[in-house]
Image 1 (cartoon, rainbow, N blue to C red):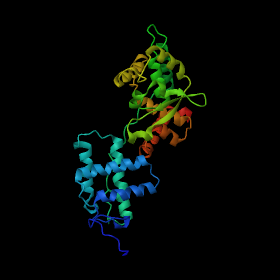
Image 2: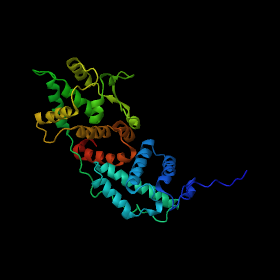
Image 3: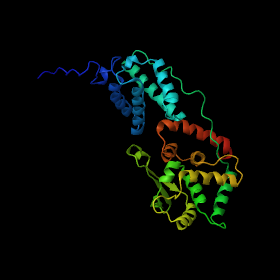
Length: 313
């Protein structure tokens, strides 16, 4: 039997990483790039995200383009299309990640000498950092909490504002995660405390499912809420928009100048966890963030801590 390697169907179709060259189609190089990312210890979520970014690149330029065809100008054209002409919203974080994907890919291709020059090296991230979020001070937090608690004992008792505020402040979950909660997701843990299960329906988002600890002070508000609303399917028996209004109204009622939102409370959770000296990777996992987005997020959490809670550092 001959030990001669069988020739690939196409001259540019690689069978090993050593076959990658300027003539190799990008789509044929992606599987080898995935193996490289795995060898570097990247999570499956990061690998999937990078792969999706490259699939979007081939969607724009076509899947027949070779590695050597890509230039800085062509990559910039893709970024402009993605951000301005694609017709799909592109957040600052998503844009930054896609630039990172291109830089990691082409730097690796240059390192293994598959291409002579790195066309992504000159790519620029979106100019200027995103503005720092606005969060509540300790006094403002106490004022909102006291008002939310008073609503539970008012002329028309309503436990929902307090439950919602305590839940988001103590977990940092997203609005989309909050609206998916069912009553049984909040439960006692094995140590006698309380926890909430954050579920995700899509298979690709299952890595974001997690159990998060809850402060025991949430129990009275939870009991009052369950008795008052008797939810059967979803924990919160109103729309996501109404949940936004509830948080916003809490701030307005006590004269908070900034709008209280899910995003604000999510940042506050990160800051409070950081000040409590929780392990940074644990904070990332609790927030359900990827390793890539966490780099920027952690830096902003530290800035917020310095700005709003300097005495606790």
